[in-house]
Image (tube, rainbow, N blue to C red):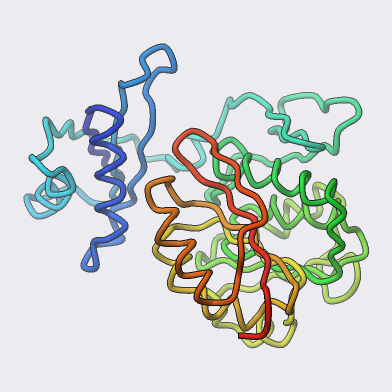
Length: 299
């Protein structure tokens, strides 16, 4: 059985708790955390959600409460049915259109005049509906419109493979490598690639998939240097990987970063400035920043 803990608070308090989670060096990553607005009609009505595959004990509750500067207002603890809550959370979502892309689950029809992606609900992150993923889709379309040419791309933390697919659509002769730390993403990406008409393998127009944290895979390093590296992960890992990404991206190459709150943007940008990158463009989706950076010179 799975369990969920919910904390309802203001947007400011939930955002601050998410930042505190990012900074918590001893966080138990068996506790999966998320947060967002409860109802668009109530701008300041937010909630923090934590999921566990075990019944939460006093230490779990204390860790979540400690994310709030003045303690959590109230922890609502509930036992979930014996089901895959990640998949269930993604079912019955409405299609989205971003830039040249339309993303939907199989129970919705395609949209005319847009590149249609079918991404079934799954245990992998990245159906396009989170503001970071949809923002990346919009930024990729903007990069293409600005004349960016990509022959070799990587998608770090690919989840469902959606952003790698978007890159291959925009630059169909590019060589693409995708990676994720979660082993469940391997078969998910393979199934989604087949569903959306992409070939797996090594070579122009194909996608290679590996399971690894960061750049820690021989194939990722061998395929470098990249013209474009996409990373929609979290602010902490983004900052930690800045030097590795600087080494993996060609001089004059580009990175597309997401997964960081606007409050975390200065820290992430500072790390990439030190690694030899400069800002080309940024978008903001809700409380999330989407950054396009260009590598200035060899690092």
